[in-house]
Length: 524
Image 1 (spheres, rainbow, N blue to C red):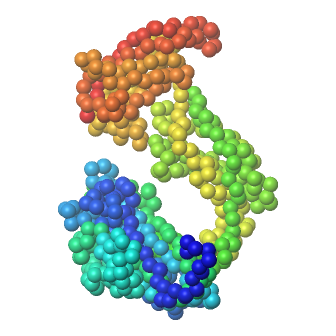
Image 2 (image 1 turned 180 degrees about the vertical axis):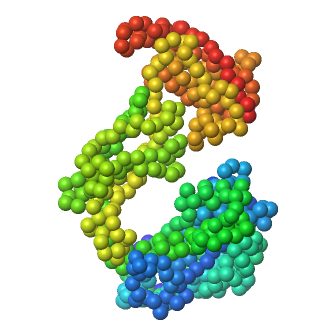
Image 3 (image 1 turned 60 degrees about the horizontal axis):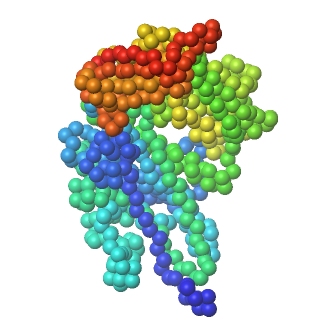
């Protein structure tokens, strides 16, 4: 309405609100499956909640946290017909077998207003909860073009476009076409739409007068196998390490049945996630809260330890405050974390402290940490919203993204310099530095120096400026032009960039300009 003097007062009748979505199954998994999985080309969509009106007044509890009657749609990465193996779960065939796409992701409908004047939930909404092909919809390049507008309205009113062969307003797509858990049907090939298959939702019809509003509440979630399980199941699948134990304890000799049965436990997992969202909504978001996270978390690398310290949580004065827990990951921040320290209620260190020295790191490895505060669980006893017990602050408030590592003292002479591993052999890359397969370490080096790396014929390929005063420097085997080095003999030239004295005796150890070189071998 561009004119303040002209106010439109005609109601909007038969209003529909509709959307469709599909999921790639994760970056790593999509790249392994390939053939368009990055935009969800091979996603299997499904739905639940056909009988929701019969259960709308039921309460989900911790004793029965997984229900099939929730109004929801979700999907997972399916088979690509271009792959000659069962790619469900995206196993890493040329690595350790880890499953890279165990995800089940989707949306649950928590509330839909009956009308602008009746804000109670309409259990018969949405009136479309099914599937449609990803790229089959009327094109609306011109927003005033009448024909595509009519076609689009007809579609969101519950008519698959262009025909019923390209969608269904109510069906479970997977159960319509899959005949077994190891069926290698490509969901794309059923309809030949390279856009993939969407979860399709449509609400309506509504009549809206000027100023009217309606409320629709959805929650999006994702769940599936843990990373540990993905590594265990994937490795067993890759190495064919039978007997294959299924989730119910029975055995199979079919490795694909084994892999897929475990992956499809993600269906229950996503339903549990949706159930918790419903419980939270039904309680008007008034669920038990964890203590606040520590506002500051510091991690400092040292010569024989990594020192961690933190400011007290603002909740530390609360009667139910429990203490702190520290978790650590090796090599990269997006992997499995293990608890390495806890203090407070119910721990081996009942006194609450604000610092901890991690003395267990291995030199040369990178470490990442996060710190959480926890309570004693006294505010979380009913199980109405959560599993009962202690509640922890979110790990993402304190999770570090810069690696910490043990940094040794500078070497006392140029003759002490060592290059590790030497030779570097790509076949042993998983045994050197976990999570950093291309890493080469220069150890016992001067506190301040420049490291120039040359090929055997004398081409300078990389220069490292070592300025932190330690005796360690690391290289990722990448040249200054961002190319990974090839097999060959390389020469590392070390040049001292400033005078340096022994911090204990004051004896001059190096003078600016002192230099030496060492050779190392790369086998790739």
